[in-house]
Amino acid sequence: MDFIERGTKSYKQTALAFFAAGFNTFAILYVVQPILPDLTAYYGVTPTAASLSLSVTTFTLAVSMLIFGSISEAVGRKNIMIASMLAASVLCILTAFSPTFSSLIVMRAVQGVALAGLPSIAMAYLGEEIHPRSLPGAMGLYISGNALGAVFGRVFSGVTAGLWGWQYGLIGVGAVGLFAAFIFWYALSPSKHFVKRDFNVKELLKSLTGHLKNPLLLILFIMGFLLLGTNVSLYNYVSFVLIEDYNISQTLVSWIYLIFLVGVLSSMFSGNLVYKFGKVVMLYAGIIIAITGLATVLIPSVWMIIAGLILFTFGFFIAHSLTSGWVGNIAHSNKAQASSLYLFFYYTGSSVGGTLAGVFWMQAGWFGVSLMNLGFLAGCLILFMLFLYLLKRRIWHFK
Image (cartoon, one colour):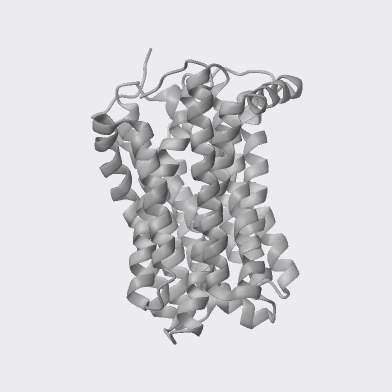
């Protein structure tokens, strides 16, 4: 079998293509998060309403990912991914010209559908075309592209909004997305090992419902829901706090999203510790570190808020990486559908948590948002205890 192996030209081109793909997807997805205060002022809406500009995108992304993966089994991988990147980039630019808040929300909802065409297929393509011994490196570059894209989208749009207006941030990120789409199209080779399968809705629904009936998987799905719900709600409203309560400019506040780079270090750091202490200990540690960070952001000091965000982000990435990884251990068949369901719950958590936090913000400000998030993570901790109890009773052992 002519698989792509590390050290070859094809490997370098494929790794570059998926780095650009991850960068494109997550820059566009999170581009509105730092400019929520600007949208609130420009359209005259509440912070809760403004948060919908991210929530609707993650929700339509979550739903669409369940479908695109199965469609690609019937029509192929590369063309769907290219169309996804191009459509999302163009829509990002067009969103800057939204005349009303309602039209902006519609555009962001459609962007979620467009964005779903890449993450739902990327891992399948890599798994089919890259040699197993070279796969971790390619996956690592794709995930790095995700992380750096998410940071770039947030920082660039926030800084640009502070200098020239939020519209220029969207246009700039969309333009970078188009360039990334060109790199992806040029660098990625057509599939060589793709085997066409008929799109069977009945079999897809049977697989999905089968996973939902597994209590262990369902617990992991809900944990993913709570984890990203906490993450997005925290970062949605921290900009409001720093701008309104501490009189920090939009441009300076935007740099706070560089904290997400801690996630890259966190994943590397925890990977080594898992071998030493095991997944159970490290998942407990990730959740507890995140809870400690949430408690720290309640201290009325800019530096303590930053310290709390760093702690939370470090713990979040440990918990998320281990929770998502456990899904593959528990699902004995149709692992791709199980991963899709995890991502569905994960991004739905972003939509629900990001919007629900607005209610707490309106009632009790930053304290209310932090209290909601502490409740989410406490629930996550309890669910993990239940997960381990059920795992022990079924005599399934994982380190």
